[in-house]
Image (cartoon, rainbow, N blue to C red):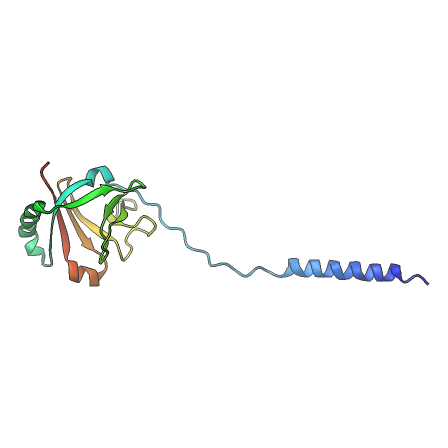
Length: 159
């Protein structure tokens, strides 16, 4: 009696069953990250590169006075350089070294300045309140940071 043929059939059937079982098990679902809105960068590094006087206010009625104070800050200017990836180098809240940031805007919405890998309006971003090439006013989105630093006023220093 030749047992090799039934054993071979049984082994083939077992291998086929194992293969089919592997195909039938669904892979564990991976979390799908929602697509981030594409943003433009309306303020370029070349537009903000340079030396700036810096001051801040907490009350809107202090904005004009703070702008005058920022002009006096040119004695010890805040320097914005172009970053290695085309953004610009600014200090984030509580950081002792500058980080590369970009301006971010979706459609005609508000303009923000923040890290390029975060969506526009991220908690660590600053909203651009005003920018005309000579004055840049930024408001922190994080309420705790805004409470400590206020609204930042940058005034371009004379060449």
